[in-house]
Image (cartoon, rainbow, N blue to C red):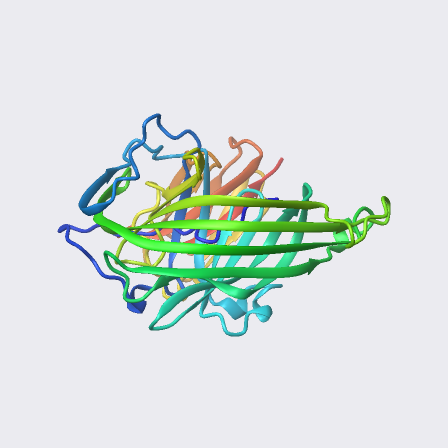
Length: 364
C-alpha cells in the first residue's frame, strides 16, 4: 500500500538572526501561498540528522538544488478544490501537490491549539491499482500543538476506514476498503539552524514515532474476493524528523526512516523556489492566460497586468528550459525545441514574486 505522506509542504523565507523560535497558529500557511517541494532520492552516506538538543546545526546543503523529483504546491481554499472540497466543509485550507503524474490534495484544520490533517483527496494505491479517493479521517492527525517550542510533547492517534469505488476500474475491481490505525508520539527535541541549498534558517526540530496498522480488502468480480477475506495487512513503524521555521507550520525538511534507520523518504524546500510568496489568494493569477495546453510549437501568454513580468519553464528534472520577459498584452514563445512531456511554468514580477504557476503538457 502506498504510504500516506501527510506533510509534504516545504516552505521557508530567509532569516538573518538565529535563535530559539516558538510556533503558534499565526504561523499557519494561508490561501495563496505557493512553493516547490523536492525529494532527495540518493541520501548521502553518513547523513547527520538525528542530533538533538539546544542550539544544534544541521547541514543539508548537499541535497540536489535541482532534484529529479519535485512538485509544485499551492495553499488553496479547501471547499473550492474540484471533486473533493465539498467533503471537507470545516477544513481551513488545503495543500494541492502537483506532480507530472497527478494532483494530491491534503486538507487541514487549524486553531489556537493545534494544526491537524483531516483528510486527503486524490490518487491512492491499493494492490497496485491507483484509485481516485476522497478520504476524510475519522480521527484527525495532529501535526503540531500550539504553542510549539523546544520540549513540547504530545501523543495522538489517527484513524480512517474508507470504502473506495472508482468507475475507471469497474471491469477489474468492484471496490476496495482501506483502514489505518496509527499511534503518534511527538517531541520537539531540538532547536537551532538548518542549511539547505536555498539558504539557512532558524528552526525547531520535531521527532515523531508513527506506528501504523494498515489493512486493505479488494472485492473483484473476476476473482470473487469478498470483504470476508483480508487482502493486505501490515504494521509499520516510521521515525519522522521535521524541521519547522516561523514562516509556516509546515516543515522545510521531512526525513522518514524505518525503525532501524533505513531511509524511506526525504522531502525539502527546493532551491529553485524562492521564498514561498503569497499570491494574495490568486488575485493576480487570473490576470494571465497561458495557452494552448497541451502545446506543440508556440505558447501564447495573454495578460491584463500593466507591468513587466517574466515566464520560466522547468522540465521534470528541475532544469530551466525557458526564461523570457512578458512586455505586452499578448506574447508568443517558441517551444518547438522542447521534448514531449510535462513541464511547469512560473510567472514572476520584477521582484521575483510568484504570480502564477501551473503544469503544461508539450506534445507534437
